[in-house]
Image (tube, rainbow, N blue to C red; front, side):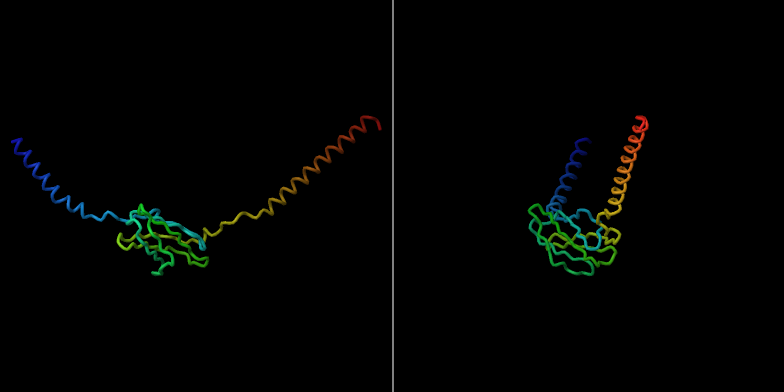
Length: 162
């Protein structure tokens, strides 16, 4: 009975390998995958999109909002990764846009980029109030020193009997 079960198990394993191996050999080894799929950017800023899993050296066409093809495409590296910087104009309307990388043979990858005007402020604070505060503290410090010196001189004169 044990011998019969072993033969049936061996036959099932052989059948599984015979049917499964050709399917695995025919599978597409290049399936592109995105890096960070969702990103936010301020109007006028640039976002870098990265993918991997492409056919090495494959040309990727990049399209974004309303099927507008960007002037710059990218070519994947020898390891099958691709990177592209996508710029959004200063006057870009806010919202979420789909940026699509399409390869000639490997397929397609989509990214979601949100243009958010609230992210636009990237400047430094105005230093003027801090300069006034620093100057005011310096004047108060100098006045305190002058007052202490004057009081000590007055006390020294009084104790000397002048």
